[in-house]
Image (cartoon, rainbow, N blue to C red; front, side, top):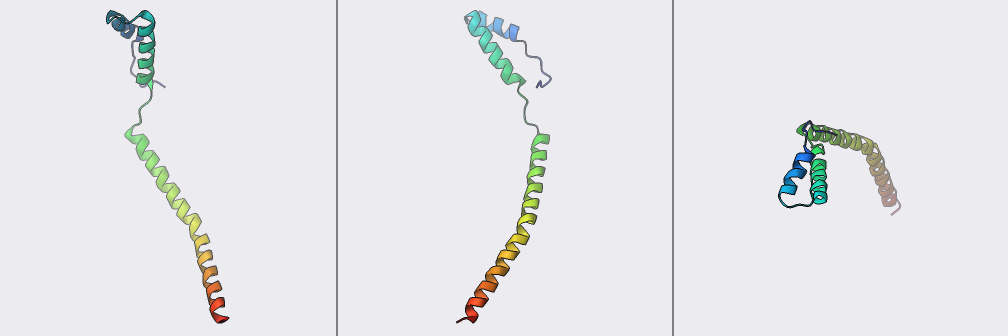
Length: 87
Protein backbone atom coordinates (compact mmCIF):
# COMPACT_ATOMS: atom_id res chain seq x y z
CA UNK A 1 0.00 0.00 0.00
CA UNK A 2 1.37 3.38 -0.90
CA UNK A 3 1.22 6.40 1.35
CA UNK A 4 1.21 8.85 -1.56
CA UNK A 5 4.91 9.59 -1.21
CA UNK A 6 7.20 8.53 -4.06
CA UNK A 7 10.53 7.27 -2.76
CA UNK A 8 13.30 7.39 -5.36
CA UNK A 9 15.27 4.19 -4.78
CA UNK A 10 17.64 4.94 -7.66
CA UNK A 11 18.61 8.33 -6.22
CA UNK A 12 19.05 6.78 -2.78
CA UNK A 13 21.23 3.99 -4.18
CA UNK A 14 23.36 6.59 -6.00
CA UNK A 15 23.86 8.55 -2.77
CA UNK A 16 24.88 5.39 -0.96
CA UNK A 17 27.37 4.49 -3.72
CA UNK A 18 28.87 7.98 -3.40
CA UNK A 19 29.31 7.22 0.32
CA UNK A 20 31.43 4.15 -0.57
CA UNK A 21 28.71 1.48 -0.48
CA UNK A 22 29.08 -1.23 -3.09
CA UNK A 23 26.41 -1.28 -5.78
CA UNK A 24 24.80 -4.37 -4.23
CA UNK A 25 24.81 -2.84 -0.74
CA UNK A 26 23.38 0.42 -2.02
CA UNK A 27 20.57 -1.33 -3.88
CA UNK A 28 19.62 -3.51 -0.91
CA UNK A 29 19.66 -0.55 1.47
CA UNK A 30 17.58 1.59 -0.90
CA UNK A 31 15.02 -1.20 -1.36
CA UNK A 32 14.82 -1.77 2.40
CA UNK A 33 14.29 1.93 3.03
CA UNK A 34 11.64 2.08 0.29
CA UNK A 35 9.80 -0.77 2.01
CA UNK A 36 9.80 1.14 5.31
CA UNK A 37 8.68 4.38 3.64
CA UNK A 38 5.85 2.59 1.78
CA UNK A 39 4.45 0.91 4.90
CA UNK A 40 1.09 2.41 5.82
CA UNK A 41 1.03 4.39 9.04
CA UNK A 42 -1.65 4.13 11.67
CA UNK A 43 -3.75 7.27 11.64
CA UNK A 44 -5.77 8.91 14.38
CA UNK A 45 -8.85 7.78 12.46
CA UNK A 46 -7.64 4.14 12.65
CA UNK A 47 -7.16 4.41 16.41
CA UNK A 48 -10.59 6.00 16.92
CA UNK A 49 -12.24 3.23 14.87
CA UNK A 50 -10.41 0.55 16.86
CA UNK A 51 -11.41 2.21 20.13
CA UNK A 52 -15.05 2.29 19.03
CA UNK A 53 -14.92 -1.39 18.05
CA UNK A 54 -13.45 -2.30 21.43
CA UNK A 55 -16.19 -0.37 23.25
CA UNK A 56 -18.88 -2.16 21.22
CA UNK A 57 -17.31 -5.54 22.03
CA UNK A 58 -17.18 -4.65 25.72
CA UNK A 59 -20.86 -3.68 25.72
CA UNK A 60 -21.84 -6.88 23.89
CA UNK A 61 -19.72 -8.98 26.26
CA UNK A 62 -21.38 -7.44 29.31
CA UNK A 63 -24.81 -7.97 27.77
CA UNK A 64 -24.02 -11.61 26.95
CA UNK A 65 -22.65 -12.35 30.44
CA UNK A 66 -25.35 -10.67 32.52
CA UNK A 67 -28.12 -13.32 32.14
CA UNK A 68 -25.65 -16.13 32.82
CA UNK A 69 -24.33 -14.46 35.95
CA UNK A 70 -27.86 -13.77 37.16
CA UNK A 71 -28.69 -17.46 36.71
CA UNK A 72 -25.57 -18.61 38.54
CA UNK A 73 -26.24 -16.26 41.47
CA UNK A 74 -29.85 -17.43 41.70
CA UNK A 75 -28.73 -21.06 41.64
CA UNK A 76 -26.15 -20.39 44.36
CA UNK A 77 -28.76 -18.71 46.57
CA UNK A 78 -31.15 -21.64 46.11
CA UNK A 79 -28.38 -24.13 46.96
CA UNK A 80 -27.35 -22.20 50.08
CA UNK A 81 -31.00 -21.78 51.18
CA UNK A 82 -31.65 -25.50 50.66
CA UNK A 83 -28.51 -26.38 52.60
CA UNK A 84 -29.46 -24.05 55.47
CA UNK A 85 -33.01 -25.55 55.63
CA UNK A 86 -31.55 -29.02 55.99
CA UNK A 87 -29.61 -28.01 59.11
